[in-house]
Image (cartoon, rainbow, N blue to C red; front, side):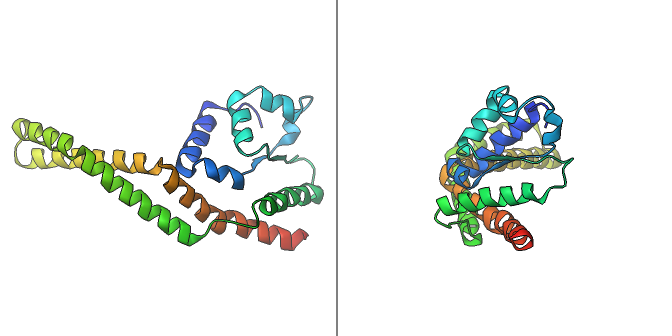
Length: 188
């Protein structure tokens, strides 16, 4: 709890860019330190931050607040119930590691497509470098340009919606669902 910082807002944007819009059906916002709200309600806290409100809306309004000063297992049970509802609404579906592999392949294919599109521009930059630098200095600058194009292509490919959807599935299967199952066994 506290202020929804610019860094947190940027992290949310990156998550959304990487994982895509479809991932929101598998997402819930969990707030810790709800005890720090004091006289303010969670609704007021969320309304005071348009970016946070927007993110919660993309998660179909799903969120849960933990009061860290209360050692009440009911808080965990309520969270598990919300997660169970979300899974039920999603038809019991979750992402798989195979989907992540497909996502990684799709990212790589998209990256290669982008690199082909920018190949001519990259070659022009390298030719200009050849005129400015020689031997080791040229090779170093050429590598820098190649790395820049690789990184830019990867970033653009990761923002491609179909690729992002596949990455989300991996996280669900390998992180969210195992935690959910452990907590469910403990409190179920």
